[in-house]
Image 1 (cartoon, rainbow, N blue to C red):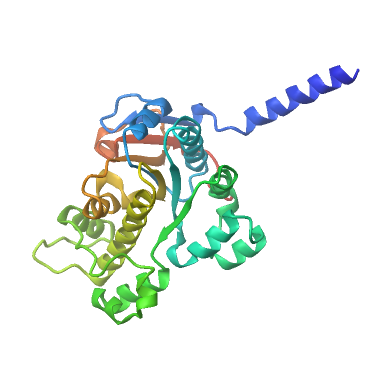
Image 2: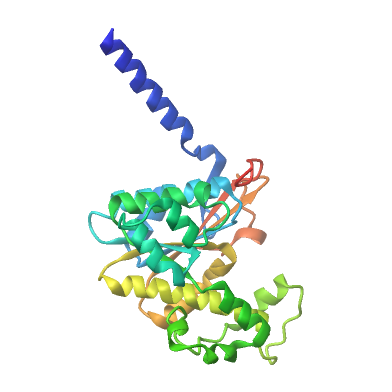
Length: 298
């Protein structure tokens, strides 16, 4: 009877595990040109790279589960050969000490969350990745510029950062950070409903976005430099890395030799269909998820 009960319990736990996993029927992986691809292809590309950028829609629950799949695969398949680090747009650089204390088991998760300004859906969207990193004793990088300084640039302009104290500047990329590329500026202005004049100086709003990109890129570069051979898995909003612009461009300013893989994840009503007009060139890989699934946190 005991053996039968144990077998039933094992099967139940296995079934529960399987049901909790993201079903591949809920997403499709393509190359940047639209050819069908796979998670295996992404991991093989990661093996030959220094950083993998997973660009998301922030409310994409299927996309978040896919990010966990990628991180799990990177840890299990690449982690035995070289260091792996997790980098997150979702934490700001001035909470790195708090994050490190939590990973080291020095503070409770409750105190960690009270002190680190986590995003609203942290527990469902990002906690599984952080907990895996904690379990495996892997670094987690708080990569984003503090929002107060992003807001300051939007209000007062790029040069206002020079007025900050040396202590505050430690949470920023080296100043002055690089100008946005013309392609990125054009894309950003289109998103904001503005025309693009290449002869016009970038707006303060564009500079605030560029600070965001530069801060994340510098954090990724620092993680790569911290231990030779490190593979950094970085999560960010898709706009920051689509088309290898934004954060990827800034990474190459800090580490010109860096090899990066861009995976852009977005939901679509017909996620089985790659539309070249919409999706071509969004990344080295494009992952389309099922838009009919409940949004994150719902």
